[in-house]
Image 1: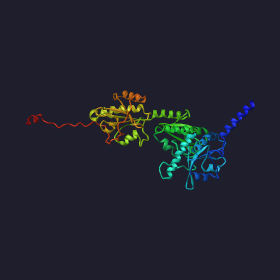
Image 2: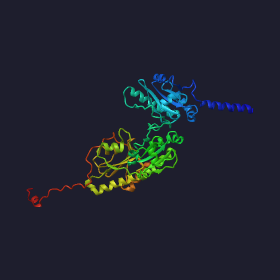
Image 3: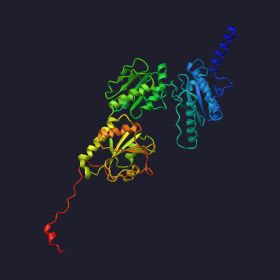
Image 4: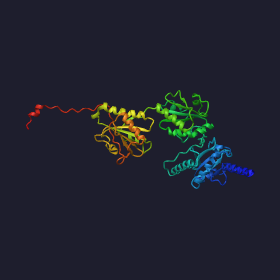
Length: 450
């Protein structure tokens, strides 16, 4: 009985080993490529996603089941292939492969093979989604439509945590490639906040950090810029900042000559939280803008064609300058500025307009008439809004915002179609000129014949 159990255990181990065995078998949905069939297969397929691997590579073995799953799902639609770059070093060299596994999109333009790096996740779902996006871009390009990628150089370096050179490691992501040539201009001389990774393409810890660094770059976009320096190619910059190991992460705040070492967790959440904390502390609050034309509305609230829309736009419709004069108006604007400072780490914007100057917009929100000041919280994504019923004072305005965040305020759909913002001259910051009536004599009035 014991011998039988041992045999069964051995069989399980053998099956498990076979499941991740490389190279891919002839019965696998993955197309095996080598020097003899590489170009003919690609020419026939037109477009393919190709893994460059080594049979001994642990990460390659871990990827194999997901790669086969993706190949099976896309069979008949997109060619999913693999190259044993350890055995076929000529192909690995041709495409600048410096580590395993490296995944590339390949396609033909005439007789030339073009390539672009894949920098996504390692699940079948991620691979399928990215491949169809790239295949769509390739197809659109063939008919002269926009949306196609320009591809990449064969020497751009590997993806999946294994590239090198200028941009190969993080190409196609929100991570900014920094070099000896551009570091001064991009980072040292800029007013932006920067998170910078100093890495080496061959470094295992750098490869492990890569997905989190990419995710953090996307999450921090618009607040903290996220970059990376390949220290094997740009030693001068790395020496300047005393880099002795990889990866080294530094945060460049206001004093770019004295960056702060980041010693926190290497997961995206820890990196993003640190970046947000520094941004919240160092960044100025968003500007309170007067709503003078459609471009301000798009930039500060709705986004251009829906892209970059704010989560919430706070719009204050203030009394006519004749009613409040400059002192009163400035008090209202100060309240908005205090609100902007309190919530500067949130994706909110703050706008104001003189009551009656944006009648169509006021109609959208059901405000106006004699009800000034009026404060509206507008969610452009859903075309929904809430109106504050309290006094336009800091404490009440904050209560209104907190109530919105907790779901305690009535939310309404805008009335009618979204209005276009009217164009008018901005306020000059002065009191309204008082119009004096012509003087008249009471005697003249009494002497008139009735």
